[in-house]
Image 1 (cartoon, rainbow, N blue to C red):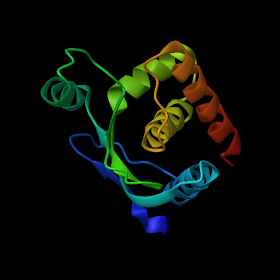
Image 2: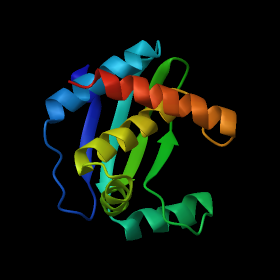
Image 3: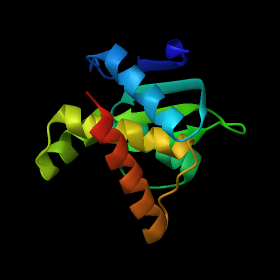
Image 4: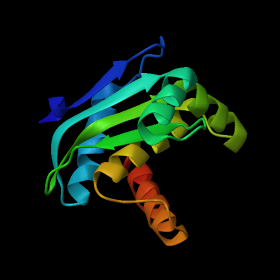
Length: 140
């Protein structure tokens, strides 16, 4: 099951370290949400790449750090999580976090979307943030 979360790069040279631990952590967080893991891809890319996806698929004319495409069925989560390494790096500096800390937050944010959590309303965003914090506390 551990090979069902895979990591890719589109137009960046960034290489994720500690993949085995990160994958295990994500699987644990997914299990805590009472979900099964289908095929999940985490794709690292540039601001330009993600911006163009945001325009093409979501009709949003903005930069973002993550876009999640959810293909989940029932309790089995599947999807693609696209992450702008440039945006994560900039946000890490803005919030006084390391790149690794901010990247884990963005990755688990995408995973929580696949688990069914939303963030469009203030109430939903607060619940999403709590779930992110719970998961981040589990990373060893």
